[in-house]
Length: 94
Image 1 (cartoon, rainbow, N blue to C red):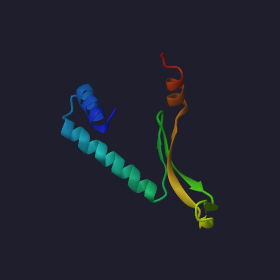
Image 2 (cartoon, rainbow, N blue to C red):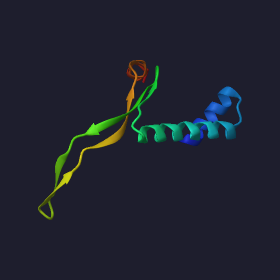
Image 3 (cartoon, rainbow, N blue to C red):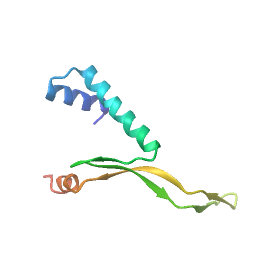
Image 4 (cartoon, rainbow, N blue to C red):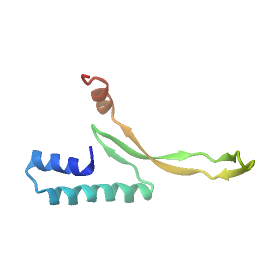
């Protein structure tokens, strides 16, 4: 499902104009990206958490050149679904 399809579904279910739904979704994504870039985590009860995961420093190897480089510790964005969300997916009918 694409973002446009999600916008269309929300518009159909709520009766809100697609343009307004699109603006709201873009604002949501913008806030999530900005806050996570600042180091904050976002928690949506019943859905999941957008969290920054810390990756430890490691040595990476370039096999073709036979060299090693140090990859410094860094953070990556991650999504952790809530237990309710996981249970819903696990128990869906095929």
